[in-house]
Amino acid sequence: MEVVVLGSAAGGGFPQWNCNAPTSKRAREGSARAKWRTQASIAVSADGKRWVMLNASPDARQQLLQNQCLWPREGLRDSPVRAVVLTSAEVDHVAGLLSMRESQPFVLWGTRRVLGLLAENPIFGALNPEYVQRRAFDLGERVELVGCDGPLGLAMTAFAVPGKVPLFLEGREPQHLAGVAEDTVGVEISSGSAKFHYIPGCARMTPELEERVRGSALIFFDGTLWSDDELVRLGISYKTGRRMGHMSIDGGSGTLVAFDKLDVGRKIFIHVNTTNPVLDEDSPERAEVAAHGWEVAEDGMRISL
Image (cartoon, rainbow, N blue to C red; front, side):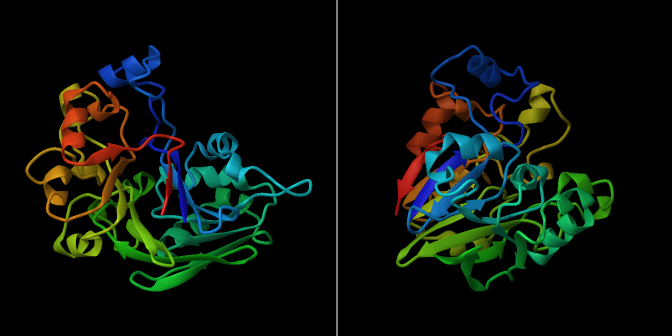
């Protein structure tokens, strides 16, 4: 099984277009120690030929062009992307679908809640149902992933993680910011004996999630913010990380502490915000995550399982 990191930053990418925080400023100045990143998404394949994208970021077109394994191979129109799996209906995860509307077959997988939200928005009608089949999955149920040309040799089990409703629903459902179980999910992807977990958004650790990921060989996990009040202290926003549905890396209830006891083989932060100091490879925060055995995802990273 092959995994390619298509994008590794949170919404807005790195550096975000309007951000002049220290990390973003260093990246924009051209430092090789603060690498530019597109918005979070990965691709996985059992055979190196047919691929599944996990989320379709707003940078999907750029990511498809930057990774040769996803280039057309046969005929006048073709794509190795046979399916897309959505872990939420956040703009960061679905906007790229609009760049995949050119009458190219693929299967779109999501929870009934997520697919329902897409169906409510007429702009996603641009995905012609004659080419794009929408298939729902249930939480906790192992499903064989099927693409537009049949089984892909990959199995998936989705599970609820603490999160929140998509940003565009906050005004409509202010009393239900935490959302329902199908709003934010993590997935376990497997092929034969190889498997990994992908959890790009998580508001907090729970006993159920601990048991789900304990002993995992590989996990991609929410690395949005270093500290819960990061944006507040910078004067950028009144929102804390938890309010936005993201568990912070640092702190007594942060990711570093939570995972130290879970015996995970390889741990990689993904969906990293433009303000997060771990994006600066010379920062003390980057040294601290490394000391805890964590890596920070980069665009183009490839992993074989």
